Length: 317
Image (cartoon, rainbow, N blue to C red; front, top):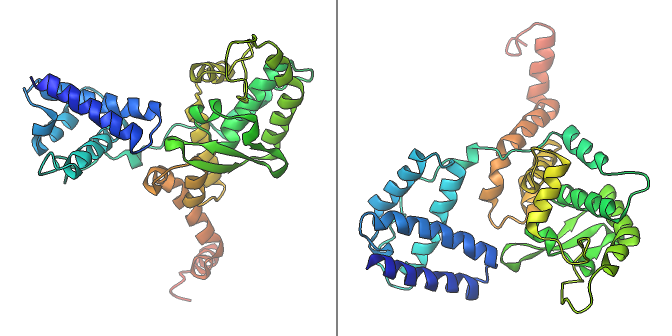
């Protein structure tokens, strides 16, 4: 009985996310998976989603921990459940939110994996032959865009020619919830995309079969002249560097920017994070930069360094 009630409730919630919140299909699927996993956990206790209490949510998190689920994934699931129960509360289907006062797993202490600057440079140089064909030009442009703009895979595959403003060195990106943002591009990325548009894309577009109805307006095309899939982009990055992924290039972009002095608000805007809390995973990198700037420019820090170099105590002076 509880299983049927849970399924009906979940269908309603996904419809709410899609219609009222305007989330993309992939985001809706992710929310649905997380709530469904909690629903299956509750079925073991013969409970419905609306009957869950604080103890069940806490037990679910402990269950995830015992089964080796990483803290970042567990935190995402808890965030999803908070959104779900907020919806139920606002709809007056429940009287209390079972996720209140639950401590979220410490995801901010875990820095996403990123590549060293030398590794990224080697990856990008690897795909830059002198007399490149259309495929090599396309692949080079894709890698440059993923790193230069910190783009998500779904954002890259949905790019169209009209989204580009290469003269101004920027691109219009549609992120989660169809939110648009302007992403600046460096000279290397601009030149790679320009060369692909000039020498590569026209050749690939000719191979598109007439009447296929494929999205020929997409920026990046396959050998058949149709838009590339997310899976294909993952395979491309994997082929360029065996232990890399598109998401790793996105994290590398953010990490390298912070290491070179970018503030978190700027990184948040570039990556399209709705909440600065998501960007705060890079806080310890920013603090390292802050300490270096403080040591180099603050009068008291300079006095301490000068005293130390003379072997004296700054207090004695």
